[in-house]
Image (cartoon, rainbow, N blue to C red; front, side):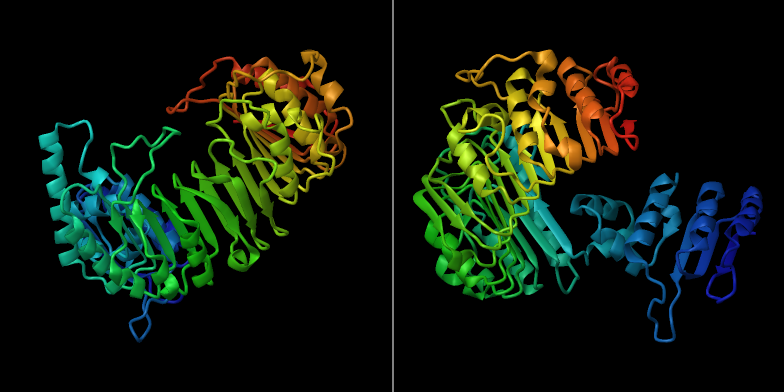
Amino acid sequence: MEEADLDFSLEYGFEGHGHLLCNLVEGVCAARVLAMVKINGFKGTDEILVLKCFINGGVFLKKIRINMLKDGFGRTVEFHCREKAEFLLTICNKSDDVSKILLPLELLLIIVSFLPFKEAVRNSVLFKNWFKACKSTKNVEFNELFFVKPDQSSETREAQRTAFLDFIRIWIANHKGADLDKFSLKLSIIGNVGEIIDQCVDFATRREVKELELDFTDSSWDMHEDYFADYEAPFELPRQTYAHIGLEYLKLYSCSFLETEVRNFRVLKEVSLGWMKVSLTAIKALLSNCEMLRSLSFKRCWNAESFHLGQEETAGLRKFVIERCRFGFDSFKVNAPNLKIFKYFGRMRFNIMTEIHSTEMEEVDLDFTFEYLYQGYGHALHCLLKQLSTARVLTVCSYMLQIIPSGPEQLQMEHSMHVRHLIMKASLHEDELLGIAFFLNSCPILECLTIQLCLKNDLSDNEEPFYFNLMRFWVDFLGDCECLRSSLEVVEINGYRGEMNENLLLKYLIFSGLLLKKMNINLLRDESGRLVESHSRQYAEDLFTIHRASIDLEISIY
């Protein structure tokens, strides 16, 4: 037998008999002559089990043709999009001969839509049916770094860049789709590239793109250095973009825009700006004209103006992110009544005059990893935390843990915080312990504590407020901790090495957490999954011997 034809379209055909069919399939495959399988009425139930048997056992199998179950109008009856598509893709990847799978174009379109653009293009080169699907993909990403390798010679990089630009032109010319969900272009502004940029933006806007990303940062810029120059955007957003009223997400890196032309972005929900000067006038223009704008992010942006955003501009804002920017922090005021998420990454630039007001705050992330000077910021951080105390989720860094005890209160906030989930990025060094105690004492309704072990901020001018006994520290400073008695249920530590300070804290939490239900200990591993510290598991297992204040506590080691 060279061909098997299975019909799953009958209402009471093979449903529930997948294992019986698999026995039949194994017998057919054992004959070693089956070359093609055709499945009609595919619904994604027992057929998947049978299909897997064919793939694994068909030694001479060349093709599997899958026809979806359709109604009288030709519409797919059972179409479990993502789950079935991804499962079939997994089967394909495990097969020794991927060319056996001949999926319908409509199913391939779904698979391609969930793949990174780079992977979709790679598969389109190998298989003809994938190439057809990729020409209609709704997610397009043109990234110069996929072609140009920075470690190559200048002549090689120039040839790679030319190939990249040619690839863009050919792809756009052959694209068959009528609309786009996302279009992304990352390109260094070297030479005359204005025409290709206009061509890309015109291609995207004509297809009613919902998400547009334009990144013109130079690959030679140091993406990790905290200090940066006053970057000027080398390119301006093409004019045709302003007429596109269906845009929902806009990311502009080193690409300026006309603040007077954004009034048509009526459904714009999220904006991310980076690597350029952004005036306060431009920010207010976005917030005032884009009534549906909910998320605003800045990365490595700068201006020297006082940063004041009033309630009238920010009424709709829900998420506000500042990453390594240089704004006028001497006078930084944001009054956003409906703001729910605030994230800040960068140097400590806030002062006691900083104002961030929101009655709806839910999540706050404060990361001063790049700060290395103490400079007496304890009072400024205390004032900032006081304004953000209504957040339910709070993430703090090593710098904050070291500095906050130097504020007006050393052991806890004068007013309790509303935090339910506290995330601390810490090394558990002695310099951080007072800060850890400060936050645990300040969060009386804390339910979940996450400790992400990381490197400590080394502050050359930091001094301990007073001496303490390390072995008795948690007994002395958490003895009256309310959350340990009445609310804390989950503790998770990531990157556990088995060091003394890690064990002292975990032992105290186990011994004192009256309502603890779960403690997850994630051992530090390298990229290959091997333990970095060979003794870490043994130290973690020793914690099982500690007397547990809660009879419901379950300790897990991963």
